[in-house]
Length: 450
Figure: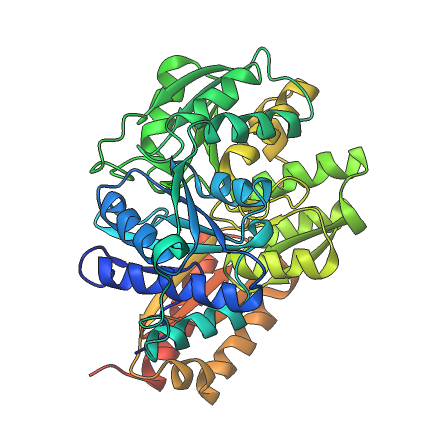
């Protein structure tokens, strides 16, 4: 068996790579491993899902796996990933399970696991769960009679979550008109509800999930829909979530995209001024635009670079007990209020800054002068050879000398595909493209595909 867990749980094509049998095995093994950690009581698990059709099937399998291991289960229904993480902490549960493939197309699904407190599972626990599945651990010796776990439904989980979000918002949003693209996903009810309760005038689009239309030409990976609605409605801004609402991107009143880098800059400055930006430090990833680094340097805010993936942003935040981090894709983490990326929380805090300052989103986002960025994915026979060849490294060194402090080169072998990613930032689009193509040519020459 290959490694099941990626950077964000187990993910695959539902009923093909990700079968009910696998979901049952993962749940059963997780419950048994956690019971070994603390045998003083039967484990309690919170189980939620996004609205994609396969979630119903996989939820049934996960609940069966958990209860057959003796765990008690509370089903919370369709809720965002960060809501499930929050409820794990609130209920003092031992485990959380979220069934979602986030921004992936509807046919995919995934299993995300949370430890006590709503934290992501440590690598060591994931490895033990995988080992338990591989060696059949848990297939024998299961409890019977009164030892079998019980199942309950929590009907007001959304209300608890929205109340928490509102309490975290620094000020009211009265006077702000916002279009919210819910991606026909898990935010379809709680997103508009939270924004309205905070005082905003809300126009919700793509908020009618039918199990099949999640992320379908909408949400944070297809921002044209929210852009068109903002322009049509004359709104102050637009917010776009993904299928499980752990991401937030925005568009200005004139339809310009505001990505995660720009949102982080806005929030970092607001938190610095409020005295809540711990150690005056922001955690971003190596893929964040150089413009963010330059803006933070100008604002006397230190920036830590993490590996790509919100998991690694979280690790840096936890290690330094820091207050803000995120990714260009719109995963923003504020540990004072959430244990994972929370798109609705991000949207609330972003709009709170508009309301508090009276400035437009375009004005606030102007703190960053984003450098043109070119990304070329180069197919290779050998990722490591393609990235580390002397000719490639010489091309990178030449490019870095040419760009100086006005640009940047990032060469990164893909973690999942036979690709080397060449990213170049420069003063102009033409320069970024020219330099990236020159390095990409060297990568192709170093490790040609057949």
